Image (cartoon, rainbow, N blue to C red; front, side, top):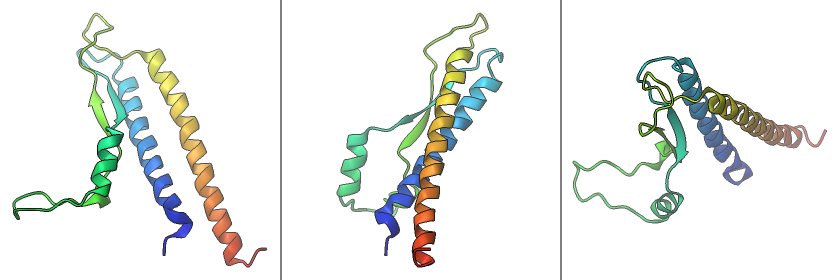
Length: 131
């Protein structure tokens, strides 16, 4: 039986995304003065490919092939931006952009946490019998 039609699971993945994004941003900020460092960004993968892969059944034709286990599937990836340079030392971290992204990500994270708290609050109300 799925509680809340999988909403908690989707919110959990949203928290994973926000955490990965926060890790990338904090790494960028901490390496803002590191010569040659290239900034990282967390992006969504191609949504169409994800939708297609979730609706199609994949068949392993050999035991040597990797299994199609969707339990560890994430909808984001970390990419390194290596095609720009903003500083004289080869570094491409824009500290103003990173601080803006950090603030936006914090708002997003807090919103998801509030939504999860609301779902668990609803469950708690049901368990208590509406009190």
